[in-house]
Amino acid sequence: MALYLLYESASGYGLFLAHGIDEIGQNTEAVRNSVTDLNRFGKVVKLAAFNPFQSALDALNQQNAVSEGTFYTCMCLLT
Image (cartoon, rainbow, N blue to C red):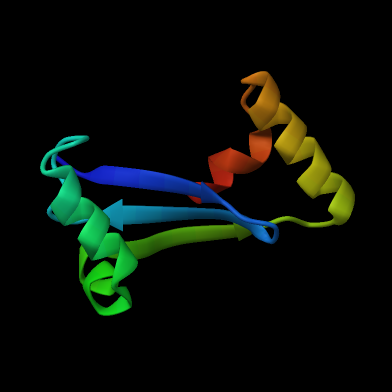
């Protein structure tokens, strides 16, 4: 089963595909170690899609939608 991780940055949304992490908390220490080491992180997580914000207003609207728990149309473009 594929595990996708959504990351929101100042420039837009990143969708990452995680390899080798099947369950949340599956050996938390090993997951934590793989994230802190850049070489290991690159082997575990691959960028699947990136959708940049179109403007500062768009970024603000996206942030507000996430904080309110609503789905903003921009996220449909990640698939």
